[in-house]
Structure formats: structure tokens, C-alpha cells
Amino acid sequence: MSWTARATWALPAAGAVLVFGIALTALVASAIPAAVCLLAAVVLLHFRHITVTVDETHLRTRFAGPVVRVSIPLAEIERLEFVPDLRPVRYGGWGYRGSLRLLKKAAVVLRRGEGVIFALTGNRRFIITVDDAESLARTVHERITG
Image (cartoon, rainbow, N blue to C red):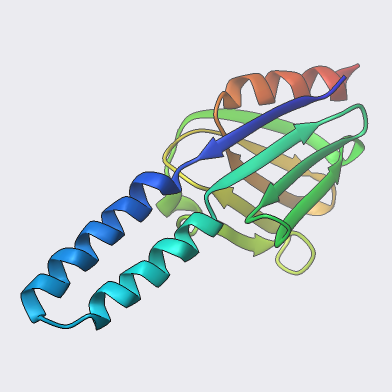
């Protein structure tokens, strides 16, 4: 049996960008700001959610549709920590940051709040924010401790 969760954040952000573009268009009497803001809103919506799945063998994340996928064998998770108030600025900001292969650390941080920090083999670290992160931490902990 697998555990799945999603974190969605971009709808309010995309709406705010569109409102800003409309207001700016009214101020400068040009359609260019609205077009730029519309493009920015479309890009934001593309990065609207992260899906995290834990099955019997892997922790998998999917961000921005097929663009960013991370698959970590549970056997590579040495320990984990639930963080009730994870702050994006401490981990490089919002979005996908880093690389497990090249930098030995990566984060998928879509908002401030609940998150999980995974310490992996090879001195690597993976950080993720997701709705009900405490349940994610508990599920992974149960799977890796048997």
C-alpha cells in the first residue's frame, strides 16, 4: 500500500500576478504589462503542485508535471526529521533547489510550514514541504525501521 500527498500553492499567486498586471496596465496604458503578467501566471500554474508517493521501496516526488522527478530508495534514508515550521529562505527559496547527484542536497519547497528533512546515504540531504508532512515522516519512518 502506498501513501500519497500533494501540496498546491500557485492559484493564489497566479491570481495576484494577474491582478497586478491588470492594475499596471491601467496605470501605464499599455497591454505589455498584462501580457507579461499573463505569461508569469501561466508559468506559475505549471509549477502548481508537488506529488509525493511512498510505496514499499521508494519515496518519489513529482514537481512541475514531468519536469522534476526524484526517486529515493527507502534503503538510502538513514534518518529523517519532521519540521513544523520550515522556512524556504533557509533552504534556497521556493521551488526545486539543488541536485542530489551533483550538490548532494536538494529541496522541493513550495511554502513555509510543515516539511521533512531526509538524511540520505552518501552524506546527501533531501528536503520537502507537503500537506500533512507529519504523516509523511511517520509513514517513511515506519517503512525504514520495519
